[in-house]
Image (cartoon, rainbow, N blue to C red; front, side):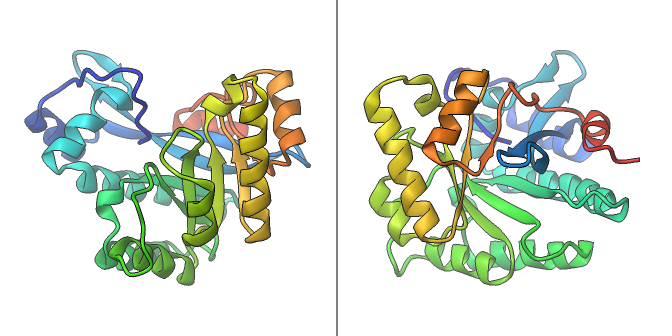
Length: 259
């Protein structure tokens, strides 16, 4: 479901999008994250695609703004969690114990959200630690706000919390030190920036995350040089076109060697 700001023009009306949620036009694609030590895919991130009957495959930056503006983002996120969660649970039954990352809007971070997600993970029978919620934009959190309590409830219940897009300007090193998290994803903008400042920021994020026992994922790995840089930073996992684009479920299953 991840949204990028590269294309601000939204496609589709709220009515179209509401219909799409209920009609099966919104489908989960899966982009793997690879363990940099073993070279194996260990997590898949669920990314929403709208299979529009007229416009074809519509990317999320074209319709997520509509969902956020109209309040449909919660319904869309639940649909993605349900679809992707059931797919990963099926892969687990076939012996491929891959993790699942799902994108979450900060507007959803309320106590009832945590309860709903934890109940669904239990219903699927997925082991603790299988599902991670990626917070796509981290709000200004304080120790007493609902968002922090929701993140803690997720972690306490066995669902990971990932700070997504670190380095894109939403989250500071200080925020990494104090907010509940189990993972940090370094934004692709740092990978594209070849300057020393980008290296220093990424390495600082890795050090803070590791000190807290969190995993670090480098996004935007497109070349062997990018991969070497992620390793120099000390990242644990990598994601990007160098490994694989986002794939439909059947293709992802073949990549994961699921029968």
